[in-house]
Length: 227
Image (cartoon, rainbow, N blue to C red; front, side):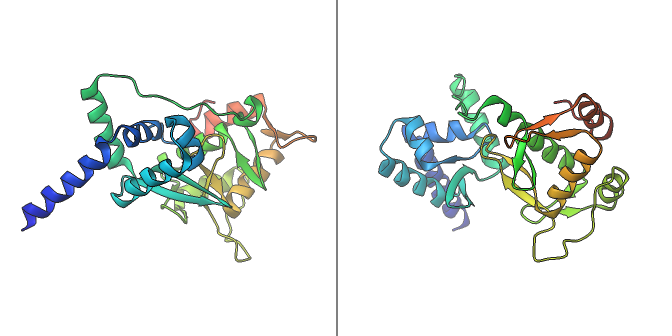
């Protein structure tokens, strides 16, 4: 019976991927970003109602996941195993995968504020680097390791628990990069420390943040990150 269950599951997964429209959606999501149903429907050139039906099928087979951010719902691949399986199939197909372009102004794509923490390309790369260094761990609510806490504290980042009901550290979906940057109290403390040290400068007339030459050197020295 166990083998029959596996065969049924494999057949259902294969059927979900075999549809051309759903395959195009999965290929677009291979860039690691998250997109709305409207964006995906436009990218694969189908009506929004048709796109919703296809997304429901992919959700049912756990090939994609839905992320809620404010009043929007974004869709992304369900995880690394899905990406690896699709990568193998795309290699067999022998064609390059499509990509979607962001309409966000270039300066805001690079660095900006998201309420009281950093967003944009720099923030997303820093978020990923903190995980790669094992300073942060977790899927939704992040935990700060002892090494991470000591390292950030040396840079003047307030790592104390949030005094209110606010989450301490979590992923916040970036609307231009469509991947997570660091949110929560720790994200706010990180931005405050960067501004205090002169690594980041706020623009008074917009949400844009400017990464200073000293900031670029600091990212390379303390986080081994080049942006």
